[in-house]
Amino acid sequence: MSYQITIGEALANEGMVRATNASCPDAIAQLDQIIAEHAATGEPFSANDVRPHLPEGVRPAAVGGRFRHAARRGVIRPIGYVASTDPGTHAHPVRLWKGATA
Image 1: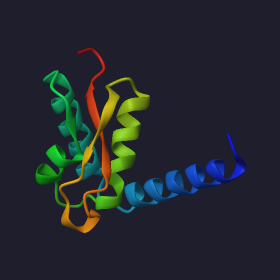
Image 2 (image 1 turned 180 degrees about the vertical axis):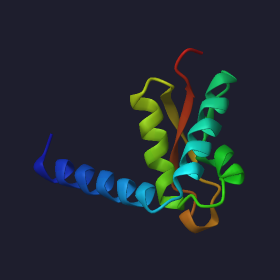
Image 3 (image 1 turned 30 degrees about the vertical axis):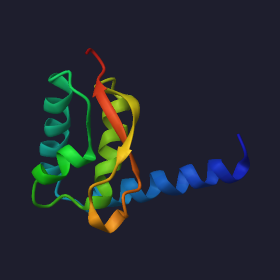
Image 4 (image 1 turned 60 degrees about the vertical axis):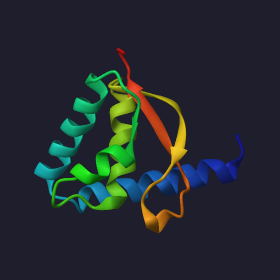
């Protein structure tokens, strides 16, 4: 792994941590629950599916970090990519996930 990728990953992680810390803790817990509920269905899902259900108080930049958190805890696993439906992202790729037990 190159040194630049390591720095990039560290900066991305730092940004997600800051966004999570700037969000309402109760809203973050609700977001984690929403991700777990999607995972429990056994169907593939992405941030596109979660975005309409974001609790008030969650900074949008925290969403990716919460998906990573769920993956590290073994709640979800990556299975591919889909295009983002958020108009501000210009259809960039977002991870497609599935419940880890599915």
